[in-house]
Length: 200
Image 1 (cartoon, rainbow, N blue to C red):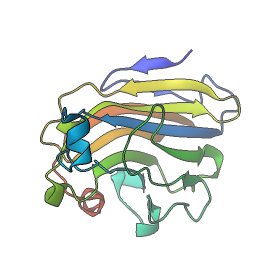
Image 2: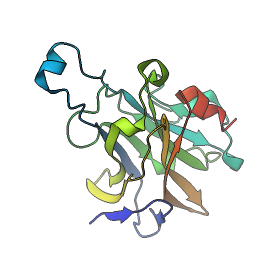
Image 3: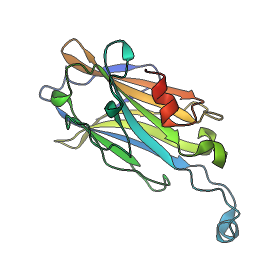
């Protein structure tokens, strides 16, 4: 049974799961209904689809980005080490379950990488006048890829109205083990590039 975390909580991933190596990080969200109804969608009265993009930022000591190639997103799906692989972009967020998935092989993560931060931003949020107040049911979960067992889930329940990006959670080294932290912080970054600049 998955352990449900609240904002700020941390949990051991590998310490109690001997042999855990391949994990799937699933991120999901749903657009808030615009309430425009069928006529609104037929005649263009509804909001544009909200295109949320999940990314993984791999950081070295001191939470510093060592290379632009350590940012895994829809434009750079697989890390050179093959340890982190993004499964591609979902353009709308409609439907149940994960909207985007990132696969991680913990044993293959380069030694200089100490933390992987999972972030979500809204594509073209300024021009589209969109923010995370228009998103509901956001979550991050970690699944044991070999058994398909959900290990951890963190449902983001804060009011993110006005926020255009989210730092959702992070997987990080602690001595010889890997842990997960539920972060859930909203930011006003208008793009992934702006988010990444925080770690340079």
